[in-house]
Image 1 (cartoon, rainbow, N blue to C red):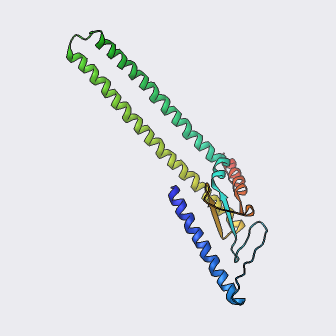
Image 2 (tube, rainbow, N blue to C red; image 1 turned 60 degrees about the vertical axis):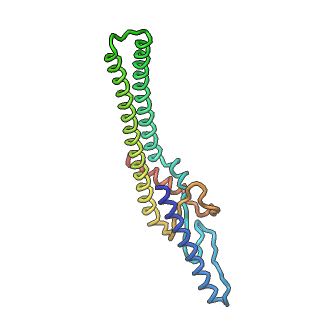
Image 3 (cartoon, helix red, strand yellow; image 1 turned 120 degrees about the vertical axis):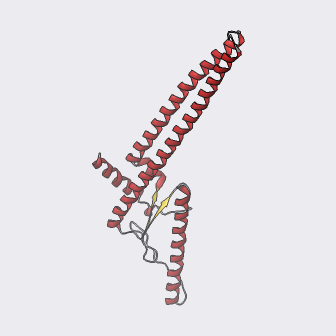
Length: 203
């Protein structure tokens, strides 16, 4: 998912750069081959009549209450799974220690009985491993679905938000993928407030 976002963001930057170059050439042809760029400083900075803004996605996910609630649900489930697996692992370890004690003290009446107990322990160990892998796989799938749900929620609100603000381009800043961005273009707080208000109404 991150890879897709990075590719999409890269394509957006390329589009913006090509658009900027084209606008500069057109302005240059109209002004004796001198490229001119109109720069203003209201809430956004239009370049060649393009209104651009960006959202700091990492900060948004931290401040968006609904996203934090869903994340905590995943964390609690992960802790519950780990606790359950650890308890079963401890029981199995106790059985293995008891088996070892019997072997050392020659308490088995026959080789067949000892082999049966050994096979049971090994089978339980394999079943525990498979169960652990299954639960982790299910949790990872749920985490991905949860992230998709959050992304869809944010994307839908961005569309609603922009129906009023009328930006031509809204970029996503994730980690350090922007070398520089004017803070006047940062609409993260506005989006967070709107998302939390909308989520509060749903609750």
